Amino acid sequence: MKVVGIAGTAKNTGKTTTLLEAIRFFDERRKKLFITGIGYDGEDFDNLTGLPKPRVFVPEGAVVASALPLLQSSPARFDDLKDTGVRCALGRIFLGRVTSPGRVVLAGPASTRDLASVAALAPEDSIVLLDGAFSRISPMVVADSLILATGAARSRDSHRIAREINAIDTIMRLPVMKDVCTGGNKVIGDGVLNVSGGLFLPGQGQELAWRLNGTRKPRTVYVAGIINPLVLLEALNEMGLNRSGGPGHVASVSFIFDHPIMLLLSGDVLQWERVFHILYEAGLKTGVLGSMALLGATVNPYIPLRSGAGKYIATYVPPESFLGDITNLTRVPCTDIILEGPGKLQSWLKRFLD
Image (cartoon, rainbow, N blue to C red; front, top):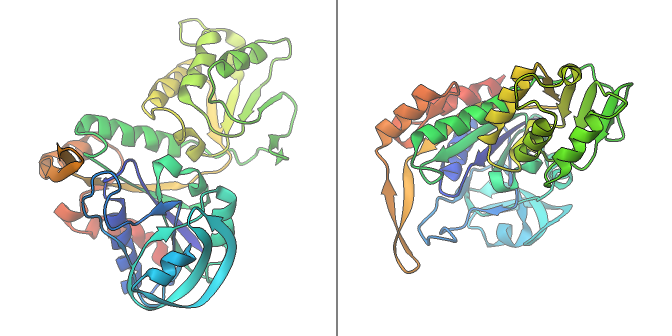
């Protein structure tokens, strides 16, 4: 089983369009497909703007996991409906094999444990496609690979979009600490400071700095859970690492995090640029226990523009220059599926055909 996550950085960034092309790619090559989402998506019209949105078309033979009422009301037809034992906001999640293709609304598991449980029911040798958004991306840790969907609805500033893609890529490229011994949500060994529950509240950074500067100097800090870059900056500032000539003993400390997704869940991703710059200048090592590959980013020039009370119209930034700026400023493969066609996206997905 191979798991590919498709995550939108904001609403209306083309996530569903990207998912539809991925489904078409694998279906045309007769790969077994298992399709589900994180939370709720796939409505006919955007809940905020009222503008039409693409629905998820599922082909014959694919297995889909969604809330039972949504499967029953879909124009697609399913057989072998099975209760996964997992609930979501719209009821029990069932899975079924598509016998007649059509559009379906995805409402999937909202937690990592539930998503892992549902994905484990995928038929052997399946490609699992996960539809999700950054606002609920934490269960995406079960994926092997990730495709970003971003664009002008996130920001009209192509330079900012490029910086965000690069910051996410930096996080995704953190080295995996393969020689670390873990147990009970802790890193085991001498000289290890285990921080449970993450770092996301003001004041936690200062507390971490005090513990690092205590009498027993840890050589490794393991943070389990969500990390807010501003809280980590608070700790680094308290340790004097944001100033020249920081304390020498800290330079031997390694920071270990659970997964890159835990670093993407809280705060502005651009703040991680500052964090990694300080860590690099101080000579501190940083790594993760698990990771995934960032395959690329799809870029959408579409922006919903308010035209009156509760009314929106579809507008666009210039597609060629928007994509060109982002492509020139990033080290991550990028494409506009509508402008360039699906060829580049397909090249990212070909690795799953073996």
